[in-house]
Amino acid sequence: MSATSQKLSVGEKIGYSLGDLAANLIFQTLITYLAFFYTDVFGLEQNTASAVIFWVGMIAALAFNPIIGVMADRTNSRWGKFRPWILWTAIPLGIASLLTFTTPNFSESGKIIYAVTTYSILLLLYAANNLPYSSLSGVITGDMAERNSLSSYRFVAVMVAQFIVQVFMYPFIEYVGGGDSIEGFSKVNTFLALSGTVLMLITFLTTKERIIPKPEQKSTLKEDLGDLIENRPWVIMLVLTILVFVTLAMKGGSYLFYFQSYVDQHSLAGFLEPIGNALSSIGLQFDSPASMGFAIFNAGGIIFMIIGISLSKKLADKFGKRDIFRLFLFISAIPILLFYFYKPDSILIIFLSQILHGFFYGITIPLLWAMIADVADYSEWKNNRRATAIIFSAMLMGLKIGLTIGGALIPKINKIYGYIPKAESQSESALVGIKMLVSIYPSIPFIIGSAILFFYEINKKMETKIEQDLLKRR
Image 1 (spheres, helix red, strand yellow):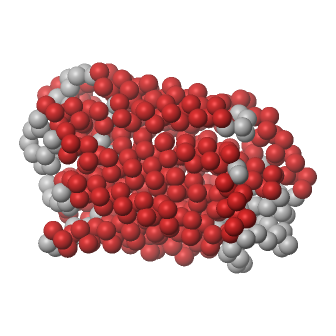
Image 2 (image 1 turned 90 degrees about the vertical axis):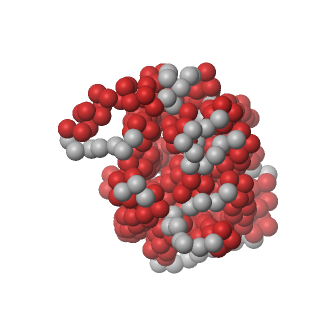
Image 3 (image 1 turned 30 degrees about the vertical axis):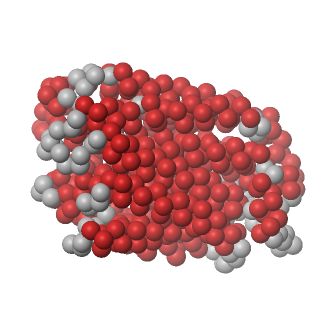
């Protein structure tokens, strides 16, 4: 491997992070709104929506990501291996994201075909864009401290995207749609698609690949896959990624149901009245207590996630990524679990728990992708061959599997407990199901994930040894 200077300018770190801002305008929309959109806006029956999310997502995870990973690792151009993919997919990805959240005037069968087609194309293009983008973090620098710093920049951008989608998006959907959710989703996603395309192009223009495989390095697909299977840290990170995104998809996609159907609207309105008056004075209006509560609830969590992210690098540099991730993933599961015990009028404690969860989980956010980059280094250190994209493709496969399982469970569980889309009120059983979707069910994967990290061998000492050994080789 050859490399130029491993230090990154602030401008390049910001430029790289804008790619994650763009990607997460799509990704956070899928996590937060896809299940609600398919059942309560697009009009799919709940079991049908669950099947579309599950089967399209699984095919994308098991087929699209490995294929793109193999192709990206074997791409050679004047722009590098991974940057060209960001350029080629920027515009098509924006178009696909818009079409996925558009509701055509089709029959029931026509809508199913449209949903399957647009969601499949979106996930294919997302893989072709986001896998090379994520792999770029493994070749943009080999300096572990710089990589931790880059991850912090990157995930501040993630939080900005999350803030836009989870705080402002639904009120804007209500506002620009004038009460018509179909029109609201279409208009808002048009703006997000255009913005995301521009941001991706900026990422392409401002980044550089520095870790370049030696020309004599040749490996077959069989060798690359063999390296993966024998790489125990990779196996653990794959399972961990699945578990983390099951939780994120399940709880993130259930909060809108939670505020619309479970939380007591009178108590919520009273709690939010001072905030509402303050926002009204600067021209911000909300159409309902549920939409305002949903926005403020997410805002509190995201703000404290950003505070947690700001502490992540220092903690990881001192104690190692593994130990910090394991500790704070477990602690962040506790506030989620406690949602089970809250009554519909326990508004203050509901908001406080979201803030605590956001802070503790925020500490782990930059570490996941930095640890995956470490796994790529571990594979090179052990086998003397580097296959960055296929390692990241496997992790993005885990992300898609987790997102798919978590997202598909929402309409399925709602159906089991008796939730009725668009109903003015829900049965007691349906309310229990909604409460379970934001508490017991999503807390379990986080707890299991923290436990399996006891078997992850890349601790602080090994991080340092791998970095030093690879530096000598390069």
